[in-house]
Each structure stands twice: as structure tokens, then as C-alpha cells.
Amino acid sequence: MEHWEKDMKAQGYGMLLTSTRVDEKAQHFYRKLGYKDCGGFIIDISQYEQPMEIFFIKGI
Image 1: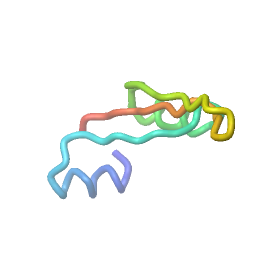
Image 2 (image 1 turned 180 degrees about the vertical axis):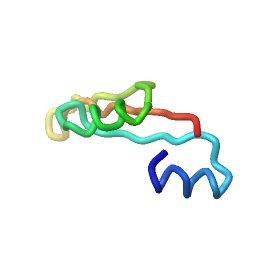
Image 3 (image 1 turned 60 degrees about the vertical axis):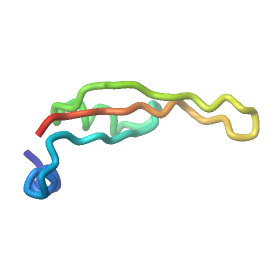
């Protein structure tokens, strides 16, 4: 378990939620740490368009 995960657990949290864009390498990092995909969203309004944001969850 990573340091910040241990810190969150010590504070009484039982799960963690994080996110990254699908075009970033961080998604592979989170999966290697045991996080599971749990959803995402797409902003498709022309002036605000960006790659999908993907959410990850992990019980600690």
C-alpha cells in the first residue's frame, strides 16, 4: 500500500476515488496499484471539449 493510501486509511477512510484523463499514462499506474475503473464522463461542448475523464476506485 502506498504512503498516501496508508495515511487515508489511518484517517478512517475505507475507499479511495481518483481520476485521470484517458490520454494520460496515469491510468496504467492506478491499475497497477489495484484501482478499478468505475466510470467517467465526456465533455463534448465545442469550446470545452477534452478527452474522457476516467474514475478509479479502491477499497483500503
